Length: 500
Image (cartoon, rainbow, N blue to C red; front, side, top):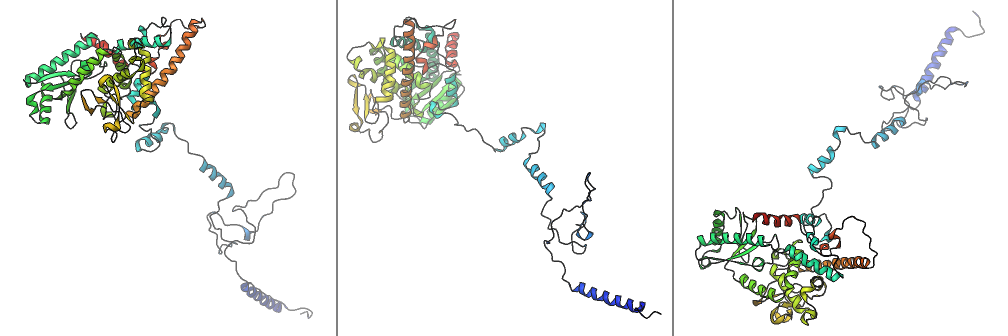
């Protein structure tokens, strides 16, 4: 056995001693701490890349101790991971894709298009059109008025001699005359209304022998429009001593049994109780009151003024048609009633300086008077302090001295010609809107008059050129800028002629 080196037995024992010492030193070292490591981040999947063409180096491969766990393997200390992945960080290549998908809206199928808007309408969602979504400066209160305004016609312009007018005043005068002739009741229409009144009178007197049916208002004075109503009053002593509601119901049943109408509306709680219905023959609206004789007296007063003032009829019909197409001719809606309109026109003619002095003939200057009527009650009349009286040739009175200032500060005050203590316009609470409408009409007609004046001047000077083969008479109209008739009015006049 050689003596210059250790034996095999001694070498094996030395290796065992050294191995145990290394194990104790490895166990004494601290273990890895949970959390981020100081090593650089690496992708979860590591692939070997082959050598690229033209390159003499290859991508180094990470050792097994630095490899991340597989997809199905959870990162932990037991499987040799250097750190535990927190898991809320998405991979970069998928992060951008997710952001793009979030921004892109899902593509709607062809058969699903429009279903969302339909659901919004059914469920009340989304923006809905409001009822009053319109121009508030057009002076129309509902859709029907706005539709009628767009479809109005001016059939009276076909009867005007436009070529023979020397100036704008004469042109407008002739147009007002043509409008009054067109809108006035025809003989056939008046006859049909008279037959309806006679039928109502016979039915009432059969049920109430002591009753007497009288007409008053616009029907009596013949100042009604083609679609105007018929005002009647029943005078009866037996009705006066009976219960008011009972009498109204009995009168309504009588009219329905006679076949005059099929539906009657009873308004018993009004200041003047009435019944309202539409006749079967002619389709005329009728209002009947009981034992209200003041309307009959007022009709006699108006008839006297119509005979005294020839221009009164034209002013009243123009003003009534103007207010009627804007729903301002009913007292219950704050507008002017027929009697108030007549009194305004009478006062205008009574207080007109040139008419009082006899400088102009009102019957030959209807166009100028219509414009000045709108101008006076639209701009200059003092509604706050002044009231109107028709007695003694027409006067103005102080509302403060009359005691009407307390409750009528800015409203219209008209003294009843038959009863000086009665204010016939006290119910017109919306007179401010009526005044603004009058002012607007005057401005519109003034602009139209200036335009037609330039047309007449160009014709007289020979500078007018007509580019059309036919002339439209409505183009020369001034009154049609604020007035018009609907197709319903035209049909009404034709039906009255056919009815006779």
